[in-house]
Image 1 (cartoon, rainbow, N blue to C red):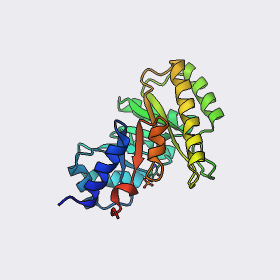
Image 2: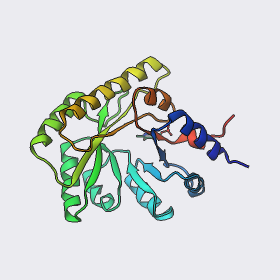
Image 3: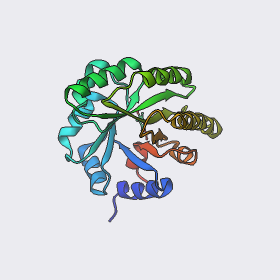
Image 4: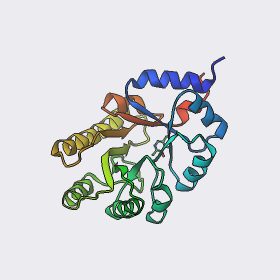
Length: 220
Ligand SMILES: *Cc1c(COP(=O)(O)O)cnc(C)c1O
């Protein structure tokens, strides 16, 4: 018999089509995550560095790990050796620390810039203006151990689908604008959408969604 997790994954995969599914593993048991892995999904994300470091040891070695939560500069060195994508870069200071630590071990680290698009009082993410300023700055100060791959954003927690849609449209516009500038050679990732709003996000142009609870809840 199919597990609930497998049924959910098949439904979500069908709904998102070619969009990449990143499995948000926070708060889940190793058994639940192993089930996801056994269904063929190998890109997982955590929002806290400590949890991420524990998970890496508990789960199969060929999982690609993303960080999706706020990263303090003093923790960069712990994840730089293995992280596949840091989705939550929100300051120049953090970029500089990633550059420094990556250079030490001769790795190139892929990152997304996190943009603040919601009306919620979240603490992290660049405003569209700060994003502009940061990009103008790094244009002239290339960081050779960092690959800026795209943008990440979270919409407001609301039932108002129209508002969510507008926020995702804003992020897509920012993404397209930066891509057109041609500053970054592999600017190809637009990470938006989670359990409550991934369908809207995909419709608005996301090519990576970060889904947790929708994978692990029992279908009615
Ligand atoms: C927790 C989290 C998600 C996934 O949330 P769900 O509602 O469980 O799908 C996605 N993105 C970020 C940044 C998160 O912290």
